[in-house]
Length: 430
Image (cartoon, rainbow, N blue to C red; front, side, top):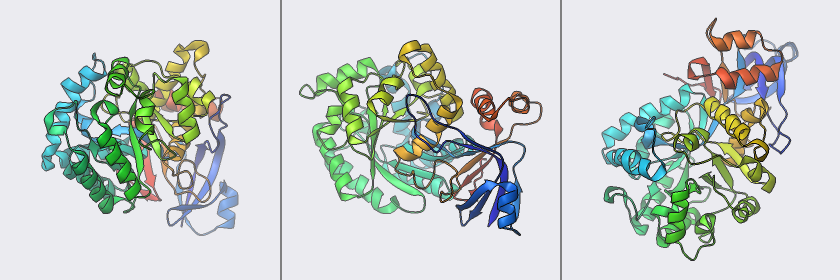
C-alpha cells in the first residue's frame, strides 16, 4: 500500500448546460493498494486509520486524474505543425504521405516510441488511438504502449477508396487483419481494440459492412471514425452516399453507431444527427486545436449538450498542435467564448471534466478511471511547475481551488507534469 498526500481536484459528475462541480481537497490522503484507490479523505484521517504505510508527499502541486484523449493519430507525430491548409489538402500533402511510410516496420517502431512518450509526458494515461493502415505498425504501437504501461485502445485503420494506393485495403483483408489484431491485443494488459475505418469518404458500403462484422466477431471492441469535420469533406461524403440521410447515417445504417462509438469532430452536425447520436449513446471527440489549425469551424458544444450527446476531448495529433489536453481544454474554452450566445460558457471544472471523466465514460471505462474516487484505478497526474515559473506564481497566489485549476489550464504545459501514474505504477515520461 502507498498513501499519497496532495491537493486533489477532480470532477466525478456529468457535464450539463449548467456545468459540473469541482471536488477539491487541499490536504487529501489517497491510499492505493495494488493499483486501486481503497481510501480517500483528509490526510490526517486516512493516515490515522491506515498507519504504517509509505507516504508519497506531493505537496506543493496539484494531483489530477489522468487525462483521457479520445482522438489522436499514431502515425502523424512527425507532421504536427503543418499549418495553412484545410482538411483534404492537409491530408494529401502532409498526413497521407507520412502514413504510407509506416509500411516500414522499423520506421513504425521509432515513431511508436515518440508517440507513447508524447502521450505520457503530457499526462495522458488513457487514449483512443487512430492506428495505422498497416497491421505491423499497429503491433508496434501496442507493443510500446504495453511496455510503458499506458491504457491504449487502437485498431487497424482501413480504407478502400479515395486514398493513395499504398493505404488501400479490401473488405476481406480489412476484416481478417482487424480480427487478428483483436485476437492478439484486445484485453491484453491495458490494451483494447477499436474498429477504425478512416472516414466514409474513403470507405465503401462493403468496407463498412466488414467493419460491422469485426464488431460482431470481436466482442467488446469499440468503433471510431471521423464525421462532419470540414464542409468540403461533408459535401464529398454526401456525393458518395447519395442515398444516405446525412454523414452519421453512412455509419448508422451499417449498425456502427452505438454506446461504444466515438466519432471525432462533428463540427457541422445537423439536429437529426445529434438526436441520433444521443439516442444511440454514441460519443463525440471534440478536437479544438485541430479545428482551429485546419479552419474546420467552431464546435457547437451547446447544441451537443442540449441534445444529450456525450462529448469528450481529443488532441487529434497531428492536425492538432500537440498532445497536451491542457492546451485542448483552453482552446475549447476560447472557441465557446467566440461563439457568444451560441456557445456554452465553460468553467475550469468543465475543462477538467472534458479532459478526464468525460473521456473515461466515452471509452466505457467510467468504473475504472476518470476521477480519483475509491474503487478507481490510481491513474493520476501531478502538476508541479518549477519555482518562479508563471504557473508556480499563479498557483501560489490563487484565490481558490477553482482559480488554481483555471491557472493550470491557462498556463500549464507538459513541462509542468512532474509525475504520472497508471494503475498505481509510476510511468516514465522520458
